[in-house]
Length: 390
Image (cartoon, rainbow, N blue to C red; front, top):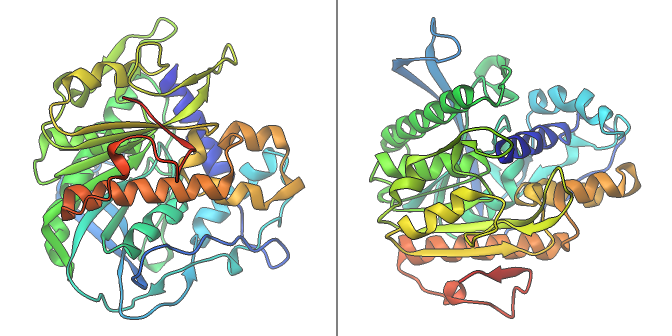
């Protein structure tokens, strides 16, 4: 099932996040391409009006990372210890030796607590199923460097690990992948996103008149589905995710989201992989044309009333849209070539990250700032890694 493929990929993402070590490789994140220095901080948000769907005795709690243009530059930790600790045994199961990465020295290009340098459009980010928010920094930090106030969410009790103030860590529950389970996941994510929208006024520098959203895998479904119910979000991006509770493959029911059946009257970008079918091994394109492995993109396209674009990352895979595109190539022989290609494909890693950054920034520049770089008009010789799908 397509949903199951994305869930396995999300688990692989968690598996590839390694425990801290003083003896491993220092992973180098690519330097952001925008003109702004980057600041960052975290915020603990409590929705007292909503009970947690997995722990109804508690109010719903979230942790978010705020990344924004700042008055000074610096470096800060890439992953919190709780995320790395959780993933240590998972990495070992992939065949990568313990202590292969020095997480203490693997940092982001962001200054913790730096003052914001102005007022900027807001972009919300939601990660893949069961994935924490932190391993998408290559995209979110870069977007902030282009003049955006980026709010990255972790969806508590679904994400593998969420660290709260005082060192409290909440672990993820088991997600079965059934239609009922996936509906609970997406409904919770939509409610989380709308609650975060309600809280944006707390944050200095957030321009609430210009709001976008994007996400990876189930995170993109979150962005699109939230746009159906909340008009505060003016533009959205789908990074390689099915927009359904159940895919309709292998005898399962086809249960598309409202974003598919209704479409949107606001701009939406599809950015997919050249994927490999898990059963046949046949390569195919994740796009809106008939024959795509994902029926939701095919059905969404004619219902989309607003601006629409579709691009495919040639030779990429599902996790090319996460920081694994940066991390795995730097492991060298510590990770088998087959495991690497299953996660991120054979696309040149540096070129893949550069293309994704350019198109995400160009889309939000066009629809939140009114700045048209013409990059989204069709094929670009500057980025042959992305195929324009008319």
